[in-house]
Structures are given as structure tokens and as C-alpha cells.
Amino acid sequence: MKHLVTIVFALFLATTSAQTSSVQKTGPLTKVSPETVGMSVERLNRIDAMLQKAVDDKQVPGVVALIARNGKIVFDNTYGMADNQSKKAMINEAIFRIASQSKAITSTAVMMLWEEGKFRMDDPISKYIPEFGEAVVLDTFNEKDSTYTTKPATSQITIRDLITHTSGLGYGVIDGDERFKKIYAKAGITDLFTTEEITIGESVKKLAKLPLHHNPGEKFTYSEGLDVLGYLIEVLSGMPFDQFLRTRIFDPLGMNDTWFYLPKDKQDRLVAVQQKVDGAWKKYPTTFYDTDYPKKGAMRFFSGGAGLSSTAKDYATFLQMYLNEGELNGKRLLSRTTVQSIMGNQTDTLFGAGKKYYGLAFGVVTPEGQDAGGEGSTGTFDWGGYFNTQYFADPKEKIIGILMKQTQGDTGDETSWKFRQMVFAAVDD
Image (cartoon, rainbow, N blue to C red; front, side):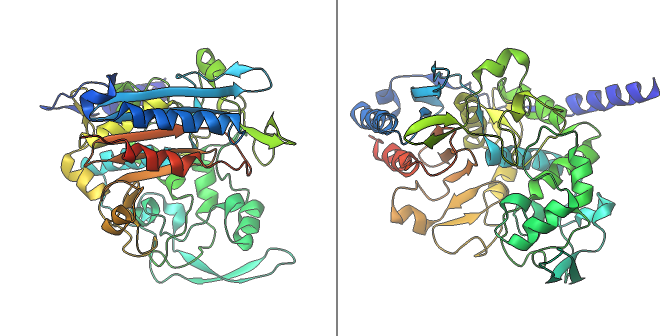
């Protein structure tokens, strides 16, 4: 009974100290004719034809594409099939595994707690998750048995390091370094999404004991840092990570189709992950993960880095909150001053000098990227997901682009770069 009271009290605190009312009151995304917000119908028709041709040419089995400007949807089209084997057509409300698009949502949740004074960005993560202790870096590795030696790191992992992928942590089964694939596998790390009976806390505590690729802050190495931060949110908020996102972000924004694990009444909208086999679309088989994870298994692993599923409309709603500098529907999730920091250059040239830098949640286009063309204005922020999803949002032009697909393997798909390039070419004001 005491445990139940503690949970109820934690939920009460979370909801009562959640997002605040705002003097700004922008409305939800609604559909309008393109001309009313300075978009060319003829040029949007080119995008329509390009996406239909990609389906006809079997570059992709199915697509949902959404374009919004000034908080208004001007393009919300579907193409092809959600599941070729069952002949299920794609619909606007189709639900996609968004994988690494989860990272921006987790980062937002982290920054909401930062705004409440729960931590400083440069605090060591060991202050809140003691299992991280003193950081060590991989020194030698024995290929025969995967044993290794370590050396002390020159600094400790901070929360900023985790959110910017500069901590030195790896990504296990999708890591670019074979040594870390073996080390993580031997330690039983859950890397992305799973049907297995494990929690993020259990996985993160295993991860905390392992060596780093490099000293914290030294390089950009795409990692499980956002999974660690998902667990940090549980530690700081006193509530399960999925419930935190539901009460603090999804419900206030009306993102009713965004979940780690789908309720039964939404499962039939989940798009199949497909691959091309001998020129035909087939369901992707179970490999190191089961693609049906959003609707089966233990449903207890809330991966902040890769676990969410969502719709094009829901994710556009999330991005519109950022274009509104932290507010939507009269609810303020973040201060515009915090959004400014999130969009700032947090990685200098570690992310790769030139067209983009990495902020606290997104890749961000630089003046060089703008001038190269096809990427959007300076400050355009973006990312994508493992199952072939992508998004971008341009704060200057107030444009959002969402392209949702679910494929694995090389299919000859060129829709990603074409879509983005053609969206900005459709501006007509």
C-alpha cells in the first residue's frame, strides 16, 4: 500500500509541475490550401509525382509525406502499401517505428527537467547514477575471448556529453567498432528496442561498467547516451520514463499516437518493416530484434534513443512546438531561451566541420549548409530513424517536412534527398 501511495504521489507531482500555461496561444496544425501560406501547388505536385514514381519503381513500398508551413499543413499524402503481403494500403494515420527520432523527444524531456533546476548540464552522470563511477577508456582488446584492459579517462561523463554523443559510449550491435560490438554483446547490453524482459535501468547499469571509446568530450561517437538519459529522467522525476513522456509531452501536445508500445486499438495501424527480395516486398525477418516489438513481448524497455513509434502528424506537432519556440496549444513545454540553447552549437567541429553541427537534440544546418543548397535555411534542424524515417524543420521559413517509410536494406531509395530539396524549392512568396 505504501508503494502504491508513493507512485500516485509521484504522478501527482509530475502532472502538477508539468508544462505551464503560456501567454502565447498558437493552435494545433490544421490543413489549408498551399497558396495561403506561400507554397506553390504546381511545385508540390512535383513532389507528389516523385513519391508516386518511387513506389512504382519499387524504391519504397509505401510512404506518408507531410509538409507544413506557418503552422498549417499544405501536403499530407500517402503512397503505396503499409504491408504488401497483406495488401494493406498506406493511410495518413499510419504508425511508424521512428527509432532515432525518439532522441529529440528524450532530449526535450531532459531539458524540461533542466529548466526546473534538477541538474546542471556539466554535472557528472555518476552524481545521479552512481554505477558509472570513474570512467575508463578501452586500452587493449583480445580478439580471441573479447577480454580487454582499460585506462582511466581524463574526465568524467557529463549530462552534456550524453545528450551530444560525445561521452565515449558506444552503440553495441550497430557500433562502427567491432571490438565494442563484442564487448556489449558479452555484457548483455540491450542496444535499441526489444521484446525481452528488461528495463532501461537494468541495461544502463550494465552499460555503466563498460569501457569508453575515447575520453568524454573528445569526439562525436553516436551512442546509447539517450538511453542513459531516459533512465536519468526516471531517477530525477521518480516516475517511469513512458509515463513522464505521456504526462509532460504527449498529452499536452495532443500526440495521441506516439507510444513505446502500442495499445491494442492502435496496433493495426503499425506499418510493416519490409525489404526487397528478388524484386518483391517481403516482411523483414527477426534478426537481433523482432520488428513487432511495438506490439508484443515484455513491453518494459523504454528506449530513449530508439524505442518510440509515431505518426507523421504527431511528429509534425512536436516539431511545430519547436518552431513556436517551446509552445503549442497554449502550453509551454520549454522557454524560448532554452530552445535557443538546444539549437546552439554544442559540439564545435566534432560533428564534422561544414554543413551541420550538433546541438542538444538535433543536427543543425550552418550558413555553409544553407549556401550549398537543398538543406534549408541556417538553423534548420533535423534527424532521421533506423527504419527509414526523416524530418526537418526550418525556423526562418517556418517549414516542416516529414517523410515516413519502413524499410531495411538497400532498395535504391532516393526519396529522402529529393523530398527535402523539392520542399524548399516549393516556396513561392
